[in-house]
Figure 1 (cartoon, one colour):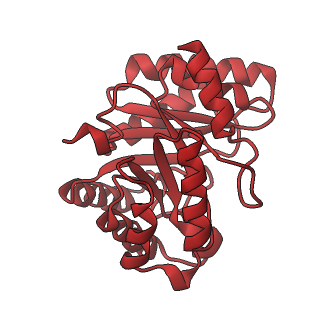
Figure 2: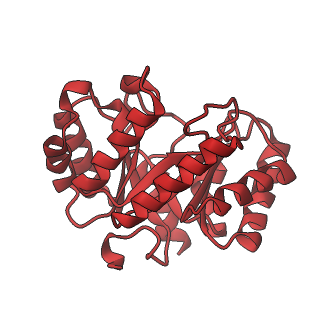
Length: 254
């Protein structure tokens, strides 16, 4: 495996700039500005791209602006992909992989949508494993993501983390709620436990009033990458820290 284009091959957390854009032109501008601000990798959220631009040629053109920096892609069932079946989300994800992405985000409730982002349905889990094998067979890496949209305690979170790891994901991604100070401290404990118990790399994030600390300092505690935005645009989450500020904090700590 070439570590220069691999998320799991890197030994340090990468500054990953998230790209949420409706057009190729907007995506390329974000990528260019992010490189200037110090991006070391990119997370391109394909579901935001308008449908008329969804071709392998267009994706290759967008990805080419990333140079040799690794690319992480999502194909969620929201934004411009609202109404897509999970099979259509899968097809779009594989298109991104074939266009040059490295890390593919497989939803934890893919093939059977659930309130808390994780399914235990046997048929759905079987299809998830098959998709993970297909991505690996094409030379890709797999991140499986679970978004709780509320706070899960330590034991509940670890149950999900172990289930995701067991499905064959290279990176376990969990986004927990962090709406109170106590939940923020609990999330720090969860990171510590994930570091001790998981064999796979993990990306633990938080949403809510007390989430920024987790996102900025989690990688110092074992989280495998930073997710940042170059600037706050209308479709960006304001909970994601800005790239330039994150780089300054990381560089000063290290």
